[in-house]
Image 1 (cartoon, rainbow, N blue to C red):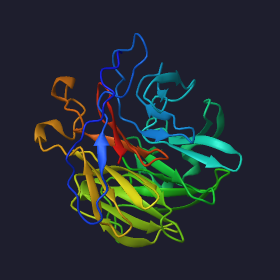
Image 2 (spheres, rainbow, N blue to C red; image 1 turned 135 degrees about the horizontal axis):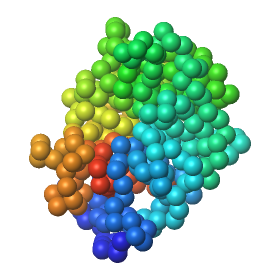
Image 3 (cartoon, rainbow, N blue to C red; image 1 turned 120 degrees about the horizontal axis):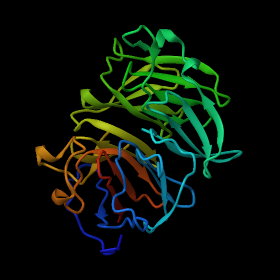
Image 4 (cartoon, helix red, strand yellow; image 1 turned 45 degrees about the vertical axis):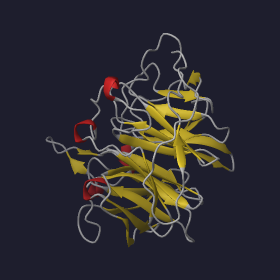
Length: 321
């Protein structure tokens, strides 16, 4: 695909509290030759320490694609699953790794950046008491997101089933499960989560999508309170520095400070027919305006990347000023 524009497009942002400003970068992603579309996206996005951007799509031949910091396609990760609904890239003492739950495969993977499997946690590692059952009485999970704590523990959410969070140690041993749809949590769809390192000790920050809120849990599972509410169905979240970045599937991306105040809104879409769906056609796309954010990421400079829920595939970039 030909690169059509490298210029930055200034997008008006709705700002409150200490404002943070961004500019949208239109047409920044360059697809490989003979690939007219990014791919059917119901996944996520992450940035490596080297600044490369990893994007997951539901295409077995190109399930995890890698682009350089300028948006040029570099490679596909071999053997990556096509159902990485949520994944993260984390640097550990023994290297940098991809961690992600498989939505259909019901397993949780740790891969090298080259795609080599380091660890796989099966669904059977989660006690059946924290699962739903299908029509035949068989327990199942529908894992949607995860993050890694500073001590190496894994936190994985079963967002499309029970809205429980499952905690594992770095060896893959199940430690505990917490959350769910009953009090005090009352979760609806606990879609994606992140470890909130802005606090000491760290917390878990969670997207309770249909409740339109973001909440905090302790790493032991205690409900700590609501961080932000009345959002446009928060579906994805990540934390860097002073800010949490929230992708809202009904047409917005919010930057939230440590006090829970929205300091920037990116790509706000007020056309209700275009948001919260993967069917909005490219003919209706507008530069810097989102339709259904489903994955979000920062790079080291604080620039923002947004992966859409889209049958065609679309990734936005907003550079921090």
